Length: 141
Image 1 (cartoon, rainbow, N blue to C red):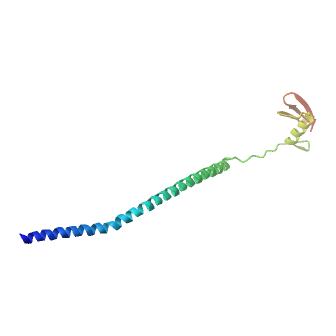
Image 2 (image 1 turned 45 degrees about the horizontal axis):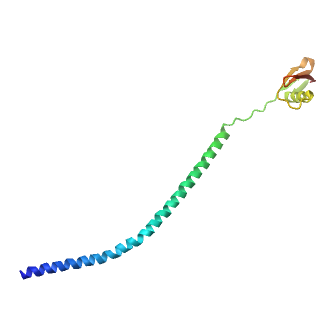
Image 3 (image 1 turned 45 degrees about the vertical axis):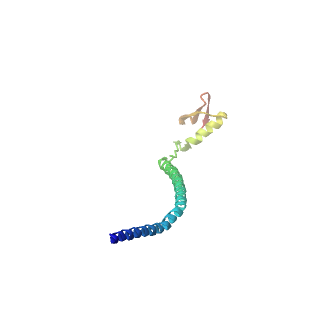
């Protein structure tokens, strides 16, 4: 039985030595892990800041794109202004309606005109006007 005790003792000693060796081998790993924790935490903070900036910039770009899309849409939906001209032709004469209205405004003597109505009577060679609903008169065509 002495032999079996010595095997047991040898086995116990071997296990103790292996455990001590494993413990010593694990110490650098634990130290490296503990040293890495602050670096990892700082990296996480930096990544979070960069992500926040990226999200903020993306929102700014999104707002700018929306504005540009609205501007472009507004430009496309605007109708071109139609240039209108009306001419009265009679007895070899040609008169522009805008010129007749302007002449009637000047002839009325009213400084602030809110409305003007002009009636053309070519057979009388006259344009009759009513300014602001109460001032009336006529001008020669």
